Image 1 (cartoon, rainbow, N blue to C red):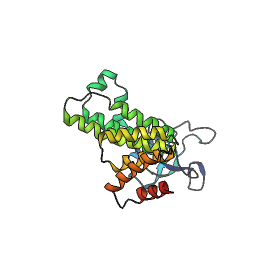
Image 2 (image 1 turned 120 degrees about the vertical axis):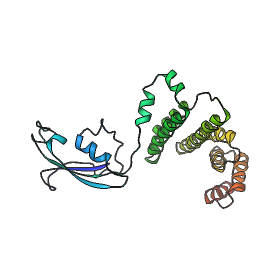
Image 3 (image 1 turned 90 degrees about the vertical axis):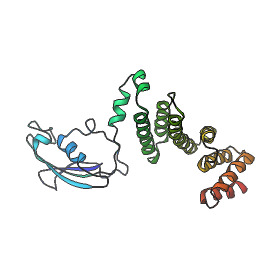
Image 4 (image 1 turned 135 degrees about the vertical axis):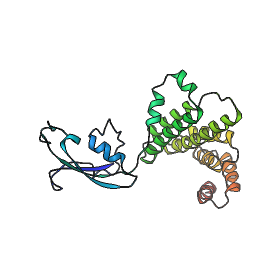
Amino acid sequence: VKYSGYLGNWNNLFCSNESSKYPRLMKLGKDITLWGLEIGLLSMTKGETALFVLRPEYAYGQRGCPPSIPPNTTVLFKVELLDFIDSEECDAFFELTYEQQDRHPLEKVLKVAATVREFGNYFFYKQRFKIAKSRYKRALSILGRSSSSKAEQSQINASKLLLFLNLSLTYLKMERADRALKYGELALEMDQGNAKALFRCGQACLYLREYRKSHDFLTRAQCIQPFNRDINNELKKLAR
């Protein structure tokens, strides 16, 4: 969220993160503890901006927060909800023992893995690639359970495929082409005709100067998506 807090009127600013280009991820009940703000944020939608007037019992109470907030003070907040991730089910899952996690319904396990991947995506887009990588790997570890049917294994593999592709791209951003190639090839083991996986492997091989392998991966990707600009540009780079 982006927020600004005011005392008494909209001219008396006492806190703000408006100047931050990328506000940090904050957790309700942990990083955001004002009762009024919690209630307010839970009523908002992504992209919404709202103004809240919080009486003392919904803000800093009878004691206030010296020296900035006097006792029994009504505070005003302008809040913009940029984005959010619902992690309630995810948090509950990680409080279980390993045995309980293994017995958890597959549908809920897949949802938890998807939430952890979403956190990884958040950090990836903030260019915090090491944290993104650890989130993706954590999601993979959740999906390491044995399946009881082909249908279940198919669902697990579909989730793993997304994570392999994410890890391959993340390692490319970290200039770890060897690791990017490994995860690209793992993705191809699950889907030989995946154009993204072929493209990632081609990029990794080009970085490693394994030009023949790069050409093989990229031309296979081009056969699947002949008008993909990224694939065609990478082939031009390889030719140079």
